[in-house]
Image 1 (cartoon, chains in turn yellow, brown):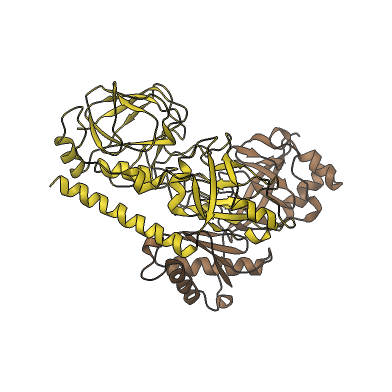
Image 2 (cartoon, rainbow over the protein chains, first blue to last red):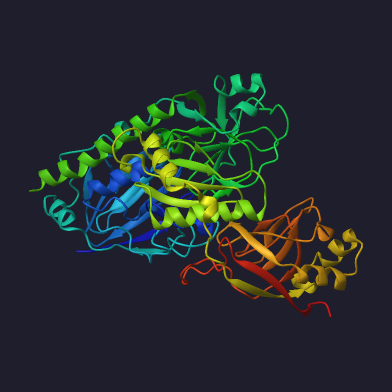
Length: 329
Length: 222
């Protein structure tokens, strides 16, 4: 049982994403992958996939696709109003689609990105060990680009667990068990927990205070590479001459115009701007679900706290596939 | 050597302050040691001009506080780095058609240096360039060793599309664009050599430590 997806309308920016292509940063290859990696991982686990399988990342305005063959899917992340034919799709549950059903999105309710995992994953060729679409380098995913009307995506073969999940469901039926993806990913508050960056102390005292106190607004020119923020203009005590060096997912850079940029999944591997903050990894999903116009504020935590929160969440995520497997013994 | 956190999933190892070959050798020595004997939890190693970054998964660093575990492991592995002799990089000759449609800024860069285009090409091709790091774009080499005589400020308005293979000068650096991308460097020529190919192993032609020279295939305008 494997199916395919036919794109009727592509939505604003719908791409094939997986867990990205780490291990090639020394060659200048961005890690990329899902902007909200926890959401895609949970969606994959719900349909019995390995956590790194490829699914769809829909942005703000979701696509309209026809599901051909026998397709089991799960949604996680933001809520863009997903419908299977006319019925709302419950998030955080495996759903077996009726043959030929249309998956479409009625409109954004909350968040910025919704992930759709399909049992078996999306079967596009791997490039450097990953199926993630890297738009800037035009590689990975489907021809290195966002989906277009008329595209057809084939699905891979479900795992044994994926088969058991499918057999337990009637067409059109949702699994009786669910995962609280919002709690796992930590959505909700507009507060983003951060560590001080290497050049935080190079800011003027007033800018240091403003950075950790004031609200910032996500600008419309934000993308998968970086979120540009509007807020108080931040100033350094004096200009810094820096040599390019590595940056990370969540590094907050300060270009000369004083408006910070948070580096996201498709960030370059290295950068030469001052790094004033580093977003705690545990809050990256929350940030990935912030849409243009949304407000956020940074709150400082310690490195020890950030890593303890990360490890606690990894433990919760590691229990999820065990629970799903138990349901289908 | 200094080790500092880069967020909660990476550590930055600082091996010097200057953009010079001695620091570069330390970076490569550290990179070699951590490739041969990886620290638990390693995800990626990213060499740069004066630093080497270790990206790690804090859930896989073993017992204890992850950053402290990583820092301890790095300190144990990186003692007396200055005694290492990193393996010599390879030599790569990049054939370039200077000027013409592939090098629209050649005359402006030459004029800025007070040289004729032919003299500028002679200076550019006589250099022995070291790949300090690869970044900014897949396979993009940051080259050291350009004669400051031919340095030239970046364009006031970056081009929205610089074709793959474009050879440029930006400030005191020279380099080659591996893929079509936006860019603000002055473009003096074009090479057919592919600097990045996902089907090749490794995909990037140039790696830190390699030596590069440019060979003039004539001028595109001639």
